[in-house]
Amino acid sequence: GGTAAANKLDDYEEGTWSSTLSGVTATSATVSGMYTKVGRTVTINGYLNVSGFSSGSGNLNFSLPFGPADSSIDTNGLQLTYHTGNSAYNHTSPYNGTNVWFIYTMTRSAMPASAIGNATIMFNGVYQTT
Image (cartoon, rainbow, N blue to C red):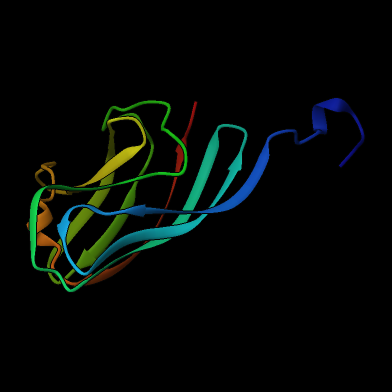
């Protein structure tokens, strides 16, 4: 409330974004979702969909709507967690500008693209941009 300049929200944006899921050979491998950016804080809600999976190489990764402020796995603030079967994954590590990859929770190693198979995964998270 109020009318003072200090109360004015001058950097607010809502939108959608989509990305190709890298490292996967499939009929369709996409990521899409919605984001809200308030100042430097970005909240994302989205889903990853792989259908017609045939192979994977390298590490599973996709791009975010805005580049993260910090590319360190320990300080970027992005925690997108999902569970499948008996495995838990954290999607935490930005690299190469706006791209991020999935990290196994317990070992902190990158999830190989070959591990995804056909899947639909919903996720959400919050991170800081520059």
